Length: 191
Length: 180
Image (cartoon, rainbow over all chains, first blue to last red; front, side, top):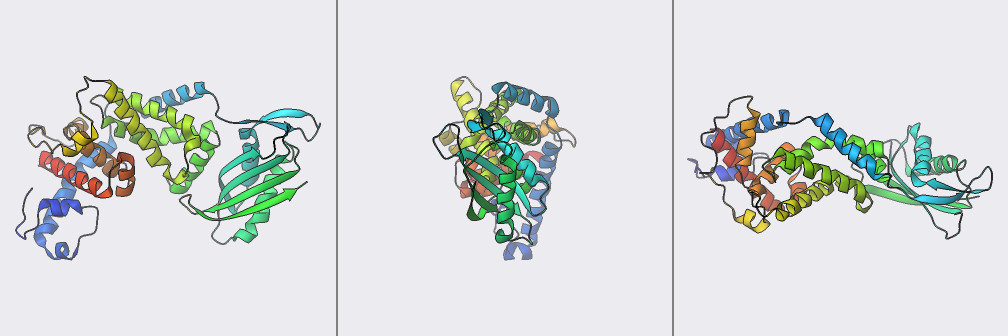
C-alpha cells in the first residue's frame, strides 16, 4: 500500500472511495490525485465488465430458465367457493381472484396495487368469509381517507362476479416508493 | 430497474403470476449470473447455479417477508447454492470456506502481472477479477457491478458493513495494481 507524501495511504483513500472526499482530501493534491487514479483504473475495468460478459446470450439463457420454471407448475392456492350466479360450489385459484382485483385497480389514477393476497377466514366449504390484503402506493395528492372506500369498492366489485361472500375484510397497507409500509387500515364490507 | 417497478413485479410474482416472474428473470439474470461467476472458474457452473437460484426463488417466494429486500434475498439464495455446490465438489479449484477467505491476503504475486489489459478486452478484465480471492470478487461484483449498497452487500455475504468496505478497498487496490 503506497504512502502518499501527505502521510495518508492509498488504503485511506480506497476505503472511502464511494464517499465524498473529506476536508483533508479536498485540500490535498496528493489525495485528490490518488482518488482520481484509483477511480479511473477501477472505472475502466468496471465499464468493461458491465458492457460485456463472455460467452453470454442473455435472452436464450433467461428463456431456458423460464422454460424450467414453467414445468414446475403454478404456485397458488385453490379455494372452494360458491358461484354467485348458480349458488353451486366450485374451485377457484388465488390467482384468478387476484387477477380480477388487479383488473379493477388497473384504471385507477390514485392508487397502484403493489401486492395482494386473498384467503378465506372461515372453515366452511364453500368459504364465505374472506380477508384480502392490498398493499398499494398512492398518488402524492391523495389521502388514505380518500382512497379507502375506493379500494374497498375495487375489491368488492372484482370478486362479486366470482364468489359469494358474507363478509370481506380488506387490510389496506399504504407503501412508499420502496415498498415499505407507511400506514395501514382495516376495512370491512358485509353482504 | 426502478424500485416501484421492482416492487410491483415482486408483488405479482408472489401472487403466483409467472409473467411477472419472467420479467424479473429476464432483467436480473445477467447480474445474478455475474455474481455466481465469482464462485466458479467456469461460466457453465455459474449458469447452473443461476438457474437453480431462480427455481428456488420461484418455489420459496412465499417465504419472502419484505418485497423491498427481494434482490438481497435472491442473491443470498444464490450464494448459498454456490457454496453448497462447491462444498460438494472436494476437488474444486477455488477455496470458498468463509474463514479461509477472510484470512486470504490479496495475492499480489498471483495477480496476472503479465496480463496486459487492453481496451475492449473483456476477457482480460475477467481474468483480473478471477485473480482476486473469492470474498473480494464477490464484494466487488455486488457493489461495483450490481450497484448494491454496502449494507445490501453485507446482507448477501453475511459479513459486517465494515468488512465489505475493507474487502472492496482490497479488491480495488488489486485491480488498480493489475491495470497500472
